[in-house]
Amino acid sequence: MILQHKNERKRLYKFLFVGTLGMTVDFTVFNLLTQLVHLAPVPASILSFITAATHNFTWHRFWTYPESRSKHVLHQWVQFIIVAVIGLLLRTALFAFIRPKIVAAFAHSGSNLSISPEVLGNNVALAIVVLVVTAWNFTANRFWTYNDVEIGA
Image (cartoon, rainbow, N blue to C red; front, side, top):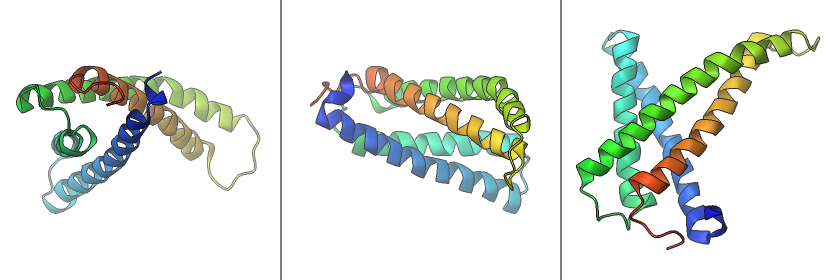
């Protein structure tokens, strides 16, 4: 298993940290574009996604995988974007599939929580898909985008 190597675990932690920062960039740019510039949500979402993906790529290239230099930066960026778009499609499809089932399960549980079954179900479903897509993004990027870095090196 790849994560048995100390350096690969460090890369995973860096990957998760950069991803968290990227999510912040995504939400910030989206809200600035929709609230201050009054751009429609869909184009704002596309621009914020591209901004966050570029942010993440830059940090991964120079911090998470600094040894990765055998590929041209544009080639590697395109690979990273392809992985991110596939992750976004997986996330959307999986969320649309599991969310109603999880919401229904909470609605039928008879729980006396102060939070609604819909809000709870939405957040549980989102947490599940984020974990799945993070695993996809890390694995696909490690073995495709940054495959020029030796495992464990």
